Length: 75
Image 1 (tube, rainbow, N blue to C red):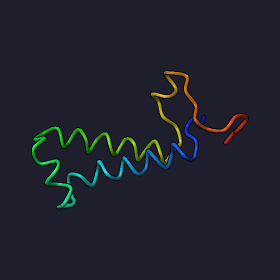
Image 2 (image 1 turned 45 degrees about the horizontal axis):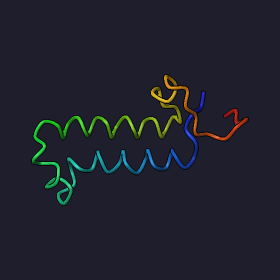
Image 3 (image 1 turned 180 degrees about the horizontal axis):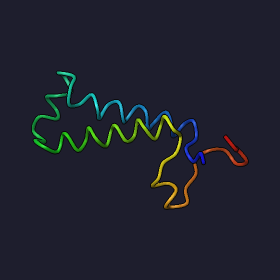
Image 4 (image 1 turned 90 degrees about the vertical axis):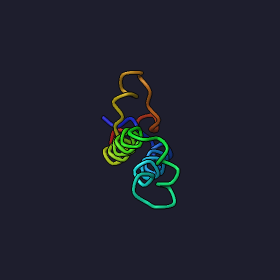
């Protein structure tokens, strides 16, 4: 079941990519370095956001009954 619309999907992808890149890209790694081990948690969170953008289903949205896709959309 799809519960992520195209605008929300784009936001998930952008923020997920930024969170993953924060640990590996040198200009962003300087921002994430003071976080210590938390940078790995942010990287995992970014990977989950990228996954939800790819499969267009967010389990948290499902638990909360939220759907950002259009009404009557079946795929």
